[in-house]
Image (tube, rainbow, N blue to C red):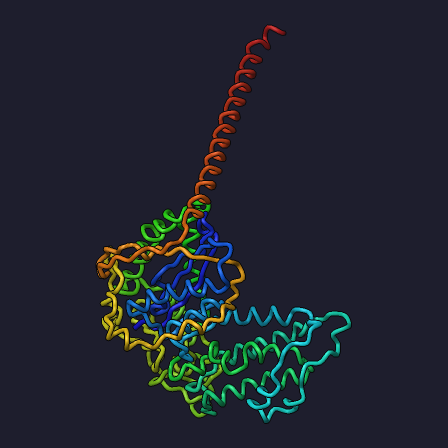
Length: 497
């Protein structure tokens, strides 16, 4: 019942400057952590691409325990994307890019001045993919306009139009492409044609070159649009589930620790943060005694749509279906909850509260199911106090998983320009329930660098604490002297009169 996961990293959580990676599961609209990974910079002469290799080892650990995500959302980090493709294969639907990061990258690029360098553009590839686009074979970037005043690649108003088109293309899917019922390939051609004609009409050559090179070529298109997911529609659109996870960790549990030690960071996550998450998961998702935030917002939107009037020809125009829970109207296309007034009217449920039903969000049709609370498919997922990892797969089970790509598929170009090395804390013998009792030899990394760094920070912190104590003592002594002076002045004032 859990198919979607989100990976991201955060900084400034510990004094060793280790980058904290995390994977959270999307459990019916609620984020729940699966695994964490600490990656820190040690060697100054490590080869480029070390972060990708470190993430591969992290993902292999999860794969060995049977973790094969259907969808894995990322924030356009190249190291994460390459590691996911290497460990779980180049499945065209597995790797998903965050819509928010996608739009931010496009807006940032289009607001920059036109580069004085001519961008690379494969005109043969573009004309082969889109032979019916006007002037596609002759429309190439030139040097015109690059020597004058540097202007933005695209004005603000047209940038907004392009971002709106990108958002619409992100949400398109064959199951809700009414009345055309286009295939994914036809949706791709239509989306590229729309964005190309806009750029061609306004003369935005560099804008089209950038969009084609980065987002509208066939390989990049598969990573961010829903139409390439087959008969599935992902529940998530962004990586905000894990962004909220980091926010709660930092503001509610690490706010009184200034760059905590690594052992303290792990302790806070496992013994402070995780028990709260386990309690809320059992209460809200497993037992259902409290409605989740997603369910509250869903019912609020549902009740708003109840009673809304619709056009007389809505059935023929949009073809809404409660059996597959799809509708061709524009509201359903971009809806966060995959609902619209046409489906609400045909569901025969009317108004209800967040705790009246079990609302199940699915990645296959029907995409929304409103059922009796006794039909909760997560009722058997209760988490006890000691939660161990799943058992390690047998060789036969591992052979049934998607094949891994060879190591030479990594070209080392993963935006990891710094020289990095790694610390693995998962090489120690594990005795938690559900783990195999296996002892492995720890990797021969020079961890004394981190230890020396932490010792220096500890000594600095001790000196700062001593200085604060001395300052408080001096301030207290000054207050005592001022009180003594005021007392003596009060006593001698009558004598002076």
